[in-house]
Amino acid sequence: MTELRLVELSAKTIVAVNNLSLKPGQEQFLAPVSYGIAATVANPLTVWQRVVLDGDEVVGFVSANFDPDAPEEHFRSILWRINVDADDQGRGVGRFAVESLVEEARARGFHHVNVMYEAGEDGPEIFFHRVGFTPIGETAYAEVIAEIRVTD
Ligand SMILES: CC(C)(COP(=O)(O)OP(=O)(O)OC[C@H]1O[C@@H](n2cnc3c(N)ncnc32)[C@H](O)[C@@H]1OP(=O)(O)O)[C@@H](O)C(=O)NCCC(=O)NCCS
Image (cartoon, rainbow, N blue to C red; front, side, top):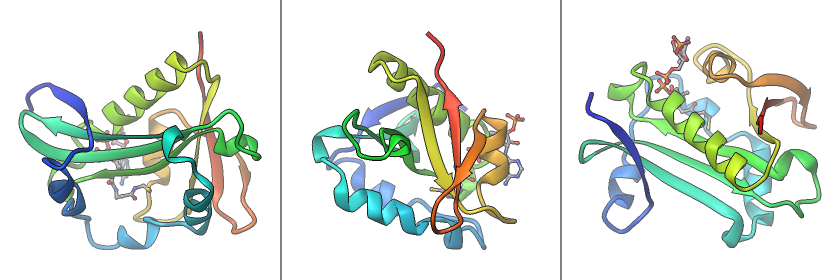
């Protein structure tokens, strides 16, 4: 693996991002209900989306929202979507994306990053635990709400 880096989503990368593949069984964990709801209330100015490149190859995508005025606390600094191409999973790409997101949250003055996910085999639960998220609650749709505290 060459050095991973983040770039903004652009016309150059969007097709590859849309074509990021999943491993069998992962598709059911991709869009929990609350993500859709959050997306409808999001201000495009607060959205942070980055493509992860390994050399010139698109290997992942991460999307988050930073909005201090979001009505619900756990939507103020939130990881919405993280995808690593099936062929590139298990090599630290996801961890790199989350660490980059935490750095962005810190730079913007947030003290936490939240995520919501569905628990279950084949889902991202273990990954989120391994990279530092701790469960703090549950949504009305029984998704786990988890959090990383951002230290100064
Ligand atoms: C979840 C996902 C982003 C993880 O990305 P990744 O690049 O494979 O993860 P990493 O290689 O950075 O793994 C980080 C840690 O999590 C662990 N991990 C990741 N996936 C795991 C799994 N399925 N089971 C057990 N451990 C797992 C790794 O072993 C690693 O642990 P360590 O660093 O402590 O040794 C990726 O599997 C994916 O894109 N899944 C499909 C989409 C999805 O479900 N997204 C989340 C909801 S939006």
